[in-house]
Length: 306
Image (cartoon, rainbow, N blue to C red; front, side):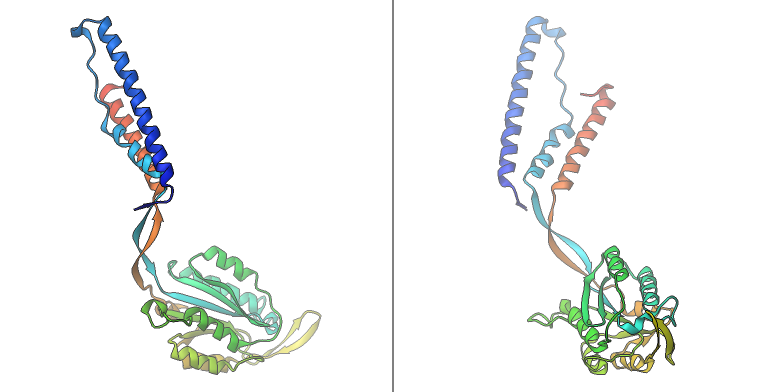
């Protein structure tokens, strides 16, 4: 155990000692005056202080030093990255109310059934691939980031997949350690109509080598659709064939409304770790619990507070 504020601990110990000495001198002086005024047989016997009262200052004193200790805890290493197409074509209304809004609804449904200890990140592509949120268990922040996605620009699908791979399989000297290659998968929501950047199938080959399955949810009419975007009508294509080949090349699958295959790939994988943890709050709570228990003991024995 280490103390972040040892000077505060020493000051607290000094003040506690001074307070104890003053209380003892006051008690001893009062005791002498009482014995001088009464005959010894009539003098009240001193009553022992309840043990919880004697113990309570110790955790409170330790809390003053802000102690820190390395404590074991279980962490789920499993991670997922949701890759959302935010290109201009995702504004098409052949999904209700649009392809992008349908994608957001599907992601929300996916999160409801996912183990809350699984870390989830968010990548968008259109007009460029962006890591919107690194994998974490903070679902509220994730949903806020998801809600802020807007359609626009070209569709660099390959770059979006590359960004997800770099998040889940970062390069570095520790990349071959088990913790650097945790169980992971990618959920891709797109209409598949890539029109810029790297070939998505080349990115899929790299994902396959990294053992990162891609589970795809195609969006839009497979035949394409004429849709009103802004002030005009446009023919907006889709390419579900590319999405199918992506899933096959990485060992993933094609999803509809059922996410169970993806949940199977994201089973929790727990490991024990240690991390520094400040104990101040726990010690303060323990000190006040001892004070409360001491008051209860005094009330039960004597029918009064000490």
